Amino acid sequence: MRIRAYPIAGLLVLFGAATSRAQAPWTVTITLTANPLPIGTCHTVLLTVVDPKTKGTPVSPLRKYVSIADFDMNVQAAAVSKYESASIWSVCACQFATVGAPGTITATYPAKGLAEDSRVPGVAFKSEIPFTFAAAQSKYNAAGCDAVAASGAAVSGSVASGGAASGGAA
Image 1: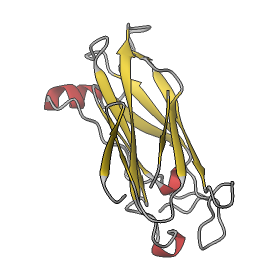
Image 2: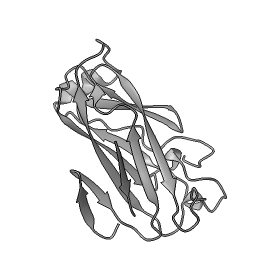
Image 3: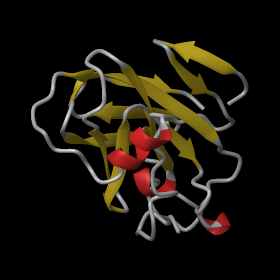
């Protein structure tokens, strides 16, 4: 599922997901590679950022392309998230998820840990997409699912910012 987000002045609701606006708008597309997300599986989340002025990927003041590593990624649902590297982020559906239940993936720019000199001036926004859960395909329960179930919150935060990467996240 793809939903475009345009950078934060007010909060908009689009297909049940909030999309925000900011100055210097970019087109952001967040794609969960399996939606609905089968319980007991992990799937990669793709994030594409395009500057409509240049029709290309935005560039930071350090002349590096803006990537998923420059965003704080988060999932809210009966799921957990994990970074395979600074630029590969996945969402895992926990065994206690309910088929058809909703979840939300959020990308926030700039990441809290992104160095000031790596941030594109005047750009700050949050983009969200909804997803749902599908029937289980395995009995796998990702690391962290037990803690999420025990908390009763059914909310999983991700590693704050993408970690050190060529994209500039710290």
